Image (cartoon, rainbow over the protein chains, first blue to last red):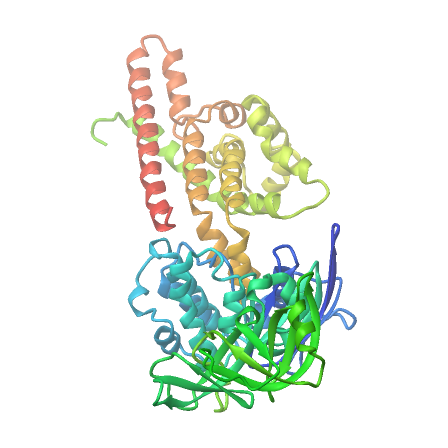
Length: 368
Length: 230
């Protein structure tokens, strides 16, 4: 576990955060720009000294201002991937990687060969850094950070400087690292799509303070998150498992909680973890067993809450057993259906977004 | 050096040797001072800055005179050097190297400071997170990245050292074979009746040296820029 508590006053801005991140796992530090996200990672890395703070990783105290412990950045073993890559311009790609490798402390759990293979760096080795594309630069920066054999990989908006297509060149590699190396990551971003693709946990920052934190499924229903991502993005995020192919429809069956969804997805082995997003605007609520409808996906559950969303509509949460989904319906509909908590309800899902092929941390022992 | 007279080649050799020694002596000190002035905040920084730049604004004769006061045989430091080590600076080529070093020091510091200010501190932070300690970071990141400034500083200082006149002649006089560098030889030739031809030759030699130095520095700078990917 990575336990972070830090407070720092910088001019008029006050940072005061406290959160615990499970390791391994990918924690997204999510918030608007200026909410203090970068300050938090710089504090974890040791580049920024908080006025008061304590940072502990798996029992090792890295910072404790009360006990005057402050392990300097060069000995903290925090791999840091900067937004602007910060590759050394006077060194080749290979020399950049070896720079980190030579100075690594602790036992080696990621070798140069592993890094080269996982990030496809083989063909880039002899290049100078200015000959690399933005995506390639970030891949090299990630590789370099990994070769320090870090306790945690800190990524400060690593994709923010890249356009959409270039992002897609880097994201799959980050997924690979998460799934194959089981390396804990703290991932700073203001892009919710990246959160959906990578994160297992979300820490929500607003004006220097943590307003909410938790696993992605829980956080997907959090009102603070809703206000940050906008009404159209609101929806339950559920980590499901592929059950197999439905031969009648040709669709793939996915278990979500105790329910089952049919989605269009190809070539997924039984047991593959699959993250799905059910947008609130795509979910219809019925108080009777729906029949003769064009909508394929129907999940039975219990209404657990009805919250005000905007003047015209409510958000209804439905527990489908092991997972909770959320639907946006008009206030008139809430009234007509006489929805109340603990009522049986059926959620009809018009469309399902697939968000990443695999999210489970591997069952095997982490390599560290 | 077949086409040079013995006196000319002696003046040339002396100039090159004095300039080289002053640059070699200045180099580490200039890097240190540039680093201190750029990176360290302390009381008296402005004073140190002014002190370093003083030779730029003072008449060279004043610098030579101050050196004479300090390093002369009866000077505060000079007498000590004489007694403790038997080193005499006045009227020697070592003294000439000292005078040119003092005069060219600010030029060197300026060039290095500019390039050090352009070194991205973010890269040093990155090196820190990769496990590099202070001395390691300086040697492997800061120093290579300020190389353009170091080269520029060395070449400017070397050229200035070749041409230093006032401080040298004041401090170590104009002794053939010991302190008579190119500009001093040129001056001597101009003073002698019928020395115009010799003076022209020496001026041409200085011109060739200067031009060669500039071309060389440009070539170096281009190579280093390519190395740094700029």
